Length: 230
Image: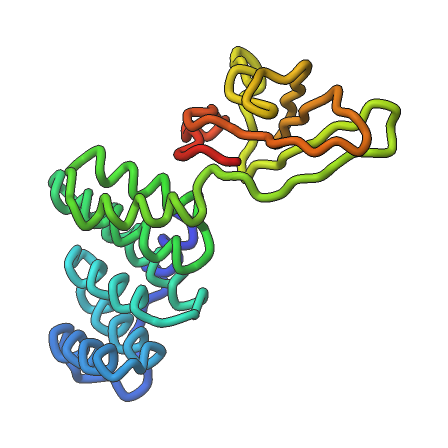
């Protein structure tokens, strides 16, 4: 994405019909088009403005924020992410870096790059804690963070087992996953953790079980399970 952001910047040029207009005039047009939800036209206007003022941090941020307002449009959100990366490259203070990272996180979320969005929010909050940004981060983490995504029952073998799949890889070594699992409120007889999956073994055919996972269960992406899963 860094290379794509650089190409975005290097290929900026005035579009047909924009000749003779200044950066502020084109930026104003971008604001008008954004307010009218004409985001493709807004992007064209902002690109024209940026071609005249490619080192303007705030113009890059404004472009990214505009694209982030487009509903259900991963392409425009992706363009916004590239604009946010360029804003970050131009940032020189903690506040501007944190803002660029927060806008990047929002556009990554809307373009479907959820893990990268979570990481960008975390990086922004590491620089500057902000109530609204933290709320957005926690919301994205609740929706798309480390979580249970599926479960299967292997009943074909002599000793059945239940397996639960997570959204991210598990820690390869050094984690005692058995301590985070309960079977009918007690420790299971055997637990296997591998890749993205935890399997509870030694079950009995025809028996019903209640399996639970405690919060804090670790992942390979430095994000533990946020809440209990039953």
